[in-house]
Image (cartoon, rainbow, N blue to C red):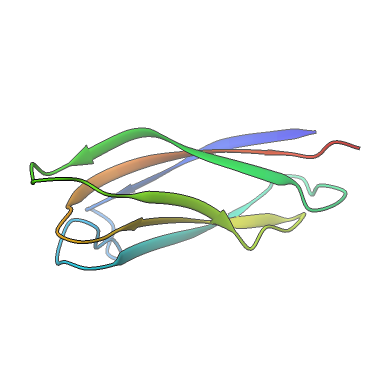
Length: 97
């Protein structure tokens, strides 16, 4: 069984702060599967699109955590002086019986 989707994060969202400040900045979103898996699935995340400000460097991480058969939390991080204006994260959840 496979489920997939994407999540858009950008500076138009009130809780979005990856484009301001310095140090560790994080945004998370809970993804609920349309149908439950029989058990906790494996989840793979990736990046489809990244919009960043011109700086000396960019740094980001996209991870899935708190994975259950009903859903998971996707987390995007940046740190240092990196400025990310928007990011589209993709995910794929699968379970093999």
